[in-house]
Image (cartoon, rainbow, N blue to C red; front, side, top):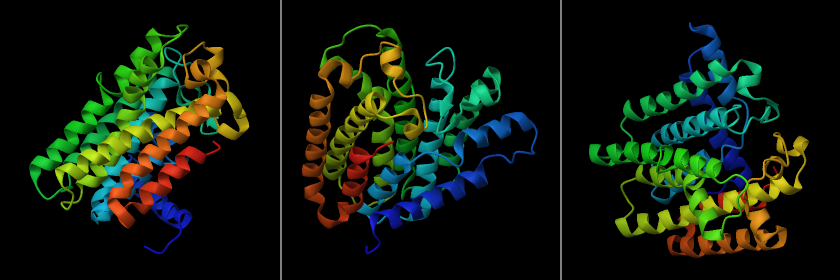
Length: 297
C-alpha cells in the first residue's frame, strides 16, 4: 500500500464511475428522458464518500476489488436516488445539486420521481447478479442490510423524522437519533458491505467496524451542518444556508459552531481509537475519515 490517499481515491472514483456508466441505461434507450435523467443524477459529480468507505473497508480483509466496486456502486445509486427525491418540492425544494440544476428542475417532477425509483431498483439488481461474498448467506445479508439502511428504519425513516421536526428545537440525543438513520445508516451499510466482501474478518471485528461506521456517519452530518452554515453556495455546489432558512434542527442550531466542530473532532477521535485495533490495514479508513472531517464542500 504505497499510493498516497489522493491517488488511491482517484483510482477508486474512476472505478466506480466506469461501472456506473456501464450499468446505467444508455441515454438513447427508450424511455429516453428517464434514462437521460438517471445518468444526469449519478454521473460526473459528487465526492463518492460512501464508495470510498466501501473500498477502504474492503482493504481490511484484502477483499477482491471487483466485488467491492459492485457494492460501492449499489450504495452510490441509493445515495443518488435519495438526493433526487430530497431535492423535490415536496421535500427540501432545492434547485441546485453538485453545481448544476437539480433533477426535477432540469427535467420535471414526474421524471425525477421515476428517476429515484429506478436508481433504487438498479442498486438491488447489481447486488443480485454477481457473487459478492464467499457464501450465499453473507450476500443475502448484505442485500438485507442495504434494504434496511434505505427504508423506514434507516434513511427514509430519518428523513420522515426530519420533516416531522422542522421548526422544533431537538435535544442532542433526538438529533443524533435522526441522523443515525437519515445519514448514518447508508454510511454504515457502505462500510459493512465493503468489509463483508472479504471472508477474513471475525464477527468481533465486524462489530467494532460497525461502531466505527456509526461514529463516521454522525461526524459526516456534523460537518455537513457546519458547511451549510459557513460555506458559500459556489463552494458547496448546492444552496448554502438552507437549514437555517427552513428552520431545521441541526448541530449548529443546537450546539453552536464551536461546539459542533468539537463534536466532529471527538467523533473522529473515537473512530480512530476503534481503528487502532486493526493496525496498518485500516490506513485507508483513517484517511477517508480525515477527508470527511476536513472537507470544505
